[in-house]
Length: 87
Image 1 (cartoon, rainbow, N blue to C red):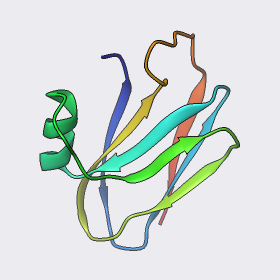
Image 2: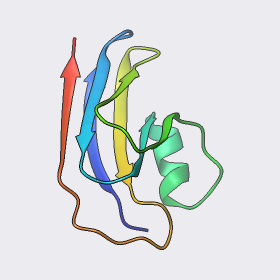
Image 3: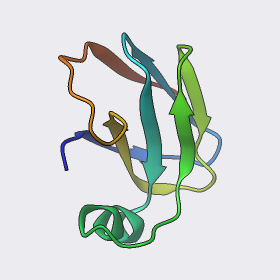
């Protein structure tokens, strides 16, 4: 599994903004669900598949969050992206 990963400490209501030049999955996961994601287990997330950017995902609660950008299974590309947070 290949993905781009970033970590941020977010407050509830902070907005993660992702800009990307490919159709991708953008996921916001807590540490437990990121661990499940990496192990290929069932996980819960905020976000989903996007083909229009920029994407804005609001943090539901304060804590450490994992931001994942991943191509759909079977796809490969050299992705250009930017991740920012609006506090």
